Image (cartoon, rainbow, N blue to C red):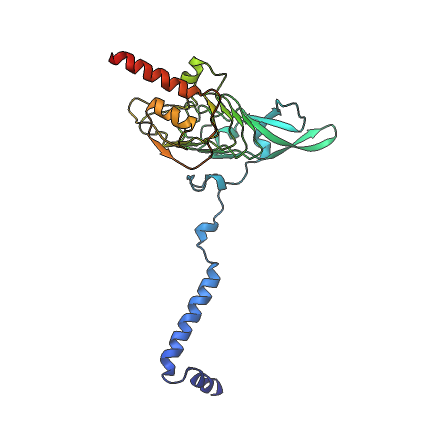
Length: 286
């Protein structure tokens, strides 16, 4: 009785309607608290059976370091290693390969953690749809990701400085996002390798490369992409005045300008190619 009277005093007139509104508000608040502010799907753990998408592929758990093959890195530091592949039969099972930052190695002095600074052999992976490199990686070797038929997404990390040629041949990635840290892509550059040593190629119109992001600080690179005859080629995202813009204009790709620092090299390799191309056009028109 006292509780009822208390409510009556608290709510004043028309107590029944106000009491119902009060209970509804409490129910909503309690439901919200119980749900934790998100759906159960948001907290679902990603694993080898999960669907791989552009938005989630970098969130998959790190692949067990015991599955990787490796050797000492080429920089001479005994604490640095290079990934050279994935052991069989796991190379035919993994949908997402997330390279660890370190791998524990057995030595005469016991187990020692060594840092992964290079990658050269994540190729011929039957089921791999995505590959994620850690920020410890500084160098990527030639043909590092070739013949991965289902490969769609690749994250090269934020610290890689050098990458070899023919990285994604027969691997139909959806986009290539080159990090700002990159300083060189391709093999030793001359007039032949500049144009013919492509980094990636189109598998066909059903799986075209959608875009390539080229930072304005990257000035030393060979041909990044060879489109199929039945495709228009990818959109090139790069700052205005960059070597990436010159490369895109040489091949006739659409350019989408982005913000970023632009470095002007002493020798503009793709600028030279553009001048040669224009000279040939002028000669043909005479």
